[in-house]
Length: 445
Ligand SMILES: O=C(O)C1=C[C@@H](OP(=O)(O)O)[C@@H](O)[C@H](O)C1
Ligand SMILES: C=C(OP(=O)(O)O)C(=O)O
Image (cartoon, rainbow, N blue to C red; front, side, top):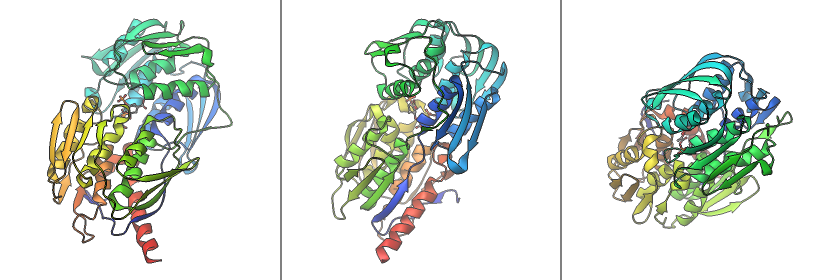
């Protein structure tokens, strides 16, 4: 793929269908849970991307039998009931937050192990100290490097019991603890140090514990914390566990008709998703889209000539999608103000700064605070947009680039380092181009 990638605009309303890849959050949780269960699990509709390959490779490095078959989107994995076979391993987690946090807690369950866990330079800046501290309160032995990766983890099983966590920086800390909890000697009772935590992701984790056989009576959740009992092992799923389509990835396709008008079927999504990011569909409706839901798909309609409304308010619960909203703000009517996103300054990159930079290059008026971004549309200028190794920056601006800003069908927005979307959606730009071609063809028919 050319770098920077000139995004070819849609010159006709979108008309077609797209299937979103499997959910990253669910694939990586299911891998951890299935590795802890006793026996073989078949995971279906898995995501095959950098973040899930990192998790698969880490589990293989730990001695698990994990067999991915990308052609049919399945992964077979044999769980060992809480045992971790290899006692020494140096794990590489790239820039995958879920892998880094989930594996840290998972490793602590092993007996007699000595591990290191490290990633790319950006991972060495992403928060993990609060998780390590809480695990140490629960009997683990984790050394950080001044509060960050690389970590050294020496293991002797996890005692568990009561601990406090500050999960302001990442909800993944709590999800990591919750998934390990049934194998901690005393279970885990987590008290939240404060109430600002993105509960949707923890609810997803608790729901998956139940799907893998943990009885409801062994789990309790309240505003102040979570209590997960021990001796509630996961049940393997030899007949299959179906991973939902990725709701964060779906946000790009909920936004596309708002940008280019038309009608788009999105397959693999469900309104009753385990993933909070499905709420972006409601924001697309606020912008003027009309959505019809089916059991496993949604059809998004946007009438040519409609005036897309601006978006306002908190994206805190589903902040992976704030970038989608920010990128389409230039074509919305009025000022878009996005709040509740301070924590995204410590993710794949400083996401607020990255979006502000790209939008300014495109001629937009942008104001940022520590936790918000305000975009007032201005005439668009052709530009090349930096993506800071962040898949969501690349994909979001990819959607804006589909807008035929100058009415001549010529690319005007270039996405730098477009292959960074391999983190969660390796063929994103190919899928977008196919939709454009399909839309051209349907317009001719
Ligand atoms: O638990 C998960 O699967 C995720 C939680 C969120 O992270 P933080 O809670 O660290 O913001 C989200 O941004 C990430 O893409 C996936
Ligand atoms: C923040 C993200 O990922 P992670 O934290 O899993 O690296 C993301 O995918 O937007």
